[in-house]
Length: 112
Image (cartoon, rainbow, N blue to C red; front, top):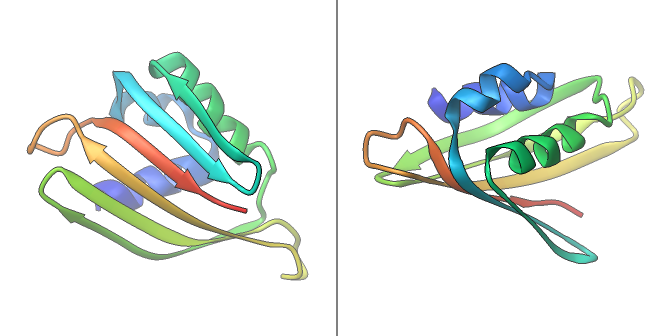
């Protein structure tokens, strides 16, 4: 549920909720067709994550969110138009700071 709530907060652009689970030294990599963009530190990571949500998706579907030890993954899609024609598929991988799974030390976002 931890990862599913993160995805919901990301979809909603909830900076406060995201800040609670992003470690102060977190590293974010956004991997796309143009290469890899890396952000480091909570403020920079939150700004980049909120940039993803700035596209104002109208609907989202989380297909799966799984965890195993210090790693987790989630994937699904965001619909960027109400007619369902503009769909953005995503895959996110996460590494927790500790086995308690309370904060993300690294996040990798895969999207076209």
